[in-house]
Image (cartoon, rainbow, N blue to C red; front, side, top):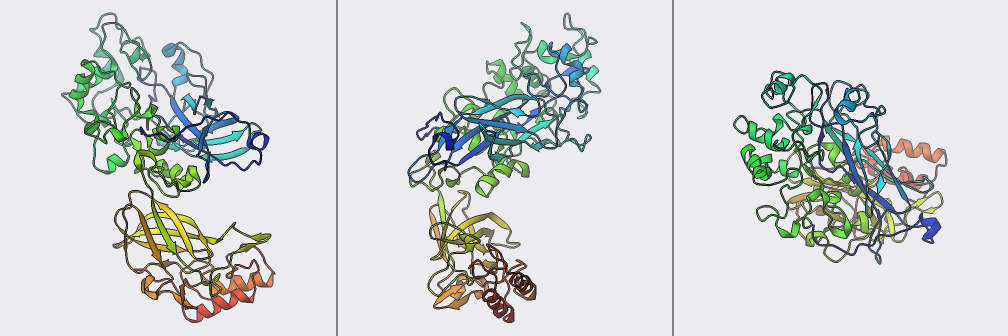
Length: 566
């Protein structure tokens, strides 16, 4: 992510104290630095890694048509917690051996850096961070089965502790380091006993921290002079025995490599090399953990996608000063991944999984200039008229209890989905909640991956789900589709002609795909109770449920109107 837009680090107080009108909007994006942190569960014999997890976050003040978004830190507090995982003591015996292993006495559920399972992140120049969260893979309600991809809760608060925004990144953790369970070694004592000919080593003086002797950059420990690093020894000693990374890295069950590259058929060795190659690279001077494969290499994505000079992907920043991981996800968990929890944050932000590429998330509007890596967003323009709101010329604006529900020319909201063109016509992108204007126009930014032909499906809170007539080819640039020009623009000609325009049938109050008495009854009840506001029973959107709404539903029920799908 080399290309940058101007980055302004704003020192500011909470908006209503400093920024005048207090209309600023903020979001927070959070991620784990590695995509997986593993640790031992039992520390009585051998310790490779302690419970130690990291989170990063960036706070963005959203932009507008005239202002760029800004990364901000001052005046804000970013808090973290792990819902459903509130303690670690008892899920592992780490605290029983922390003094012997690391020379520190720790309070229960407090990790090596002094942080716990809840707390506030530290503010740096352009981001927030917390290192050393002592999480285990066991949730409070299940102490037997690992849950390696738990969701953290990250909350953005101002100086008065008012919640401004929240998000849920994965905080990955696994105990699946399989020296014994994989069948390679009979016991951890067996591993220690294999060291007994090495001078001064007592395999019975347990617990033993491997990094005490073998340098480990993951822990920042230099080891002992003349002894090879932990990464070298592990790869060199086992290079003639296996090339299965999951024998040590988590794992056959965890499957920590789970991202878009995995989905494309890549394996660990495509980037890192096999066991012998990894060992040889270390022997030739590479520093494990500190020097890793580069996205910008010639045999990978190339220089337009390179990390910052001298930095790893996890450390690099690009577009607008955002970390690469803020948009793309963590190493080994590049978006989208095969695990649903990894995709929760981006779906919440942009309504679909994958790289965070919906410009409006930060900009509010879609910029006309190219974005990161020269990316130009594809746009879908949909023109649709809703029977309940259509007055013969355009659509009326829907009302709530205190006036129009939406500002400007927005009539209401619709939901747009893209579905695959072949059976079973599963959803390919969306659902996208989109504002539709009084003239029927609406627009949304599409994932760049949408390069095939898809059905366009329009849904509305009290209208019939309507599919377009036939699959539409998508690619780069803008795709436009007009449902109002002909009956055949909808699958099965499922549109109604009013004043020369084809409109989507109204009256499916309960959204079961058919207009019938089940839709009439709630309208009748709300009308009897003089209900007002932005209600699904208010078909014509005037803010009052009455006979005007009943008429639309009654007429369409008499025609047995329902959704028609491939």
